[in-house]
Image 1 (cartoon, rainbow, N blue to C red):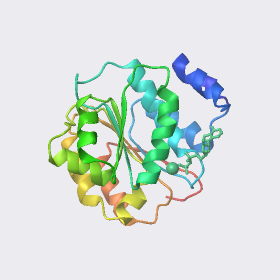
Image 2: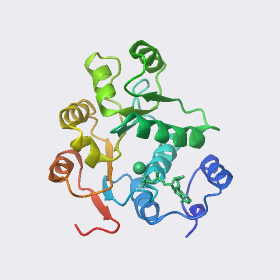
Image 3: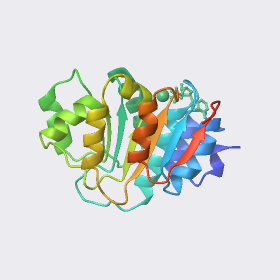
Image 4: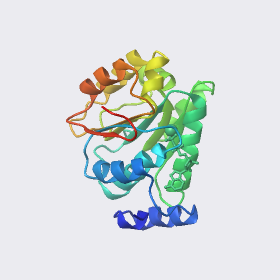
Length: 214
Ligand code: ADP
Ligand code: MG
């Protein structure tokens, strides 16, 4: 299978060609079409299997093609357990949206809080964040999530291992639009908290497990 078989915007097609990415990995092949029809997903596949593009591609596609639910609120947020991961994801996102008018922001710990506030005031449509720092800004009402269309949890298992379940709950509750789509990705299925939380967060999710038995 080739990436060209997905009905992606031409700008996405061009970026993939530029990166020399021709065929989707297993997780991408299974998750992308499901995400593109708006379903919630709970997916696991091992490290290095291409989970980042499995959610970023349908995310960017949706933002390019669909009308925003609200004018100012962020439209999509990717939550990551660590700064390092958030930075990597942000790097991939920047490549994908380079030729579009979409605005993005990286909001993670260890960076200046007031600079981040200024960035948030510019109304980025896509935010890549660590759960802890995004939660701090949410509590200070630096951003509103009522118009959030897409909530993505990357390495959900590690976020729970690191003790972010309270913050994730709060973010989930604030992002209360009835049309919200939620995509949850993890490398393992070991943490039972992930399954319990998924039941709360996800609406009738499609489960995708590559190399695991559910
Ligand atoms: P995971 O999150 O599952 O650990 P990543 O999304 O970090 O995996 O991807 C691992 C590596 O594979 C990255 O360097 C990425 O650029 C590359 N990659 C992802 N998808 C493809 C693809 N379809 N074709 C070639 N390389 C890919
Ligand atoms: Mg990953």
